[in-house]
Amino acid sequence: MFEIFVNTHYDIVGKRVYAFWISGILLALGIISFIFQGLNYGIDFRGGTLVQFKFEENITAGEIRSLLKSPELGTPQIQRSDVNEYMIRVLTMGTGDEIQNIIQNDLKEKTFEIRRSEIVGPKIGEELRRKAVGAIFAALFLILVYISIRFELKFAIGAVAAIFHDVIVTLGLFSIFQWEISMPVLAAFLTIVGYSLNDTIVVYDRIRENKLTHKNKTFPDVINLSINQSLSRTIITSLTTFLVVLILVIFGGEVLFGFSIAMLIGIVVGTYSSSFVASPILILWEHKFRTKELVKK
Image (cartoon, rainbow, N blue to C red; front, side, top):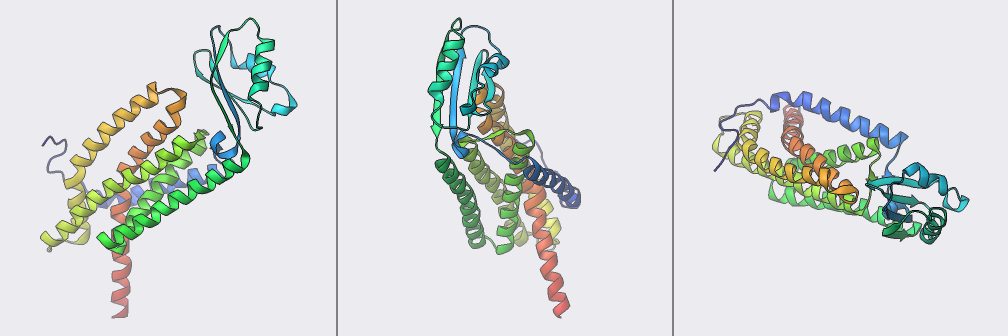
């Protein structure tokens, strides 16, 4: 089997304090952004109207914005998705025809076609938001139960903490850069949960095997050994997936950007957390309860 890293002896566990600092800073930045900026919910989650126009002639977003000054439209969001192609979002419903009429009447010299038109009610958007949050927490709970049965509770806590870390860091970056949260992005977040768990389970399997075969080693040494043994497989798998998703980010266009950038971040953060978050948490858990046992004695 092809391997990149063979017989490595990296002291990953020994660097866990630095990893916790990095994770803490990323989480803190994300939380600060949540407080001051919030998330940029798309039409799917907050309701409204989206119309995507493709013009044959050259036109700028400023020209389009100068036309859409009707009080009924509020403040439209105009986003370029391709050459002479723009997505117009408004938070009011049923305004797709009005936008089309304004552009048709005021830009008679321009030829255009409507590539996409969506209308979502505010109640539906709110319900979708609630169900999205519920889906992620349900997934985390089921993972906690599954890993507790397959391994031990401390392994389940480490895996869920790593997944929670991955989701919050990715959400934080979406908040910082104000990337739009849509249904495809939600699908990406649920995929991130599964991807991160897969990496973590591989390392956990190694830890469980090495605890039995290397009884003379300390628990941190067993974890270090297990991570190093899984490193080549983890890097190769993550790298191949990363390259595919990177192509989507670069060439996938505006429609796929939210999904692909969420996946790209999730792959990087998930690979990092399986080694630097999920496994070191086992040491903290072991140390905490072993210390309690010694105090009782």
